[in-house]
Length: 83
Image (cartoon, rainbow, N blue to C red; front, top):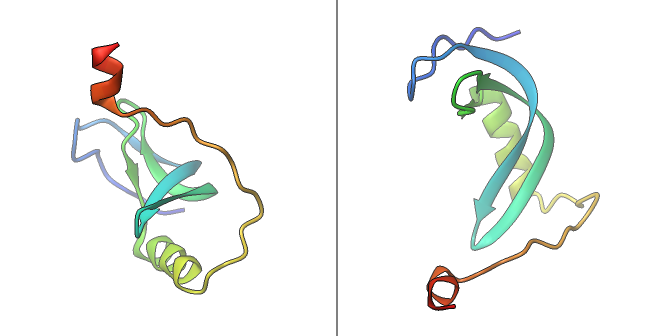
């Protein structure tokens, strides 16, 4: 288990958990589930070890076969304000 130290955003305690990570690459959104990450118990900020970050980069560069595709709702903010 990795020791993350305190959160750089709020100073809260960071504990290792399996987290969901949203990753944007070349205009597309990818979601990784069960990523080992440090998660701030106060504000929710997520921290990755360099090993985990490199593994995610490898998955992205090798065109990994995704296990699932989901539909994500999208709204343009200006359209929502005008309504």
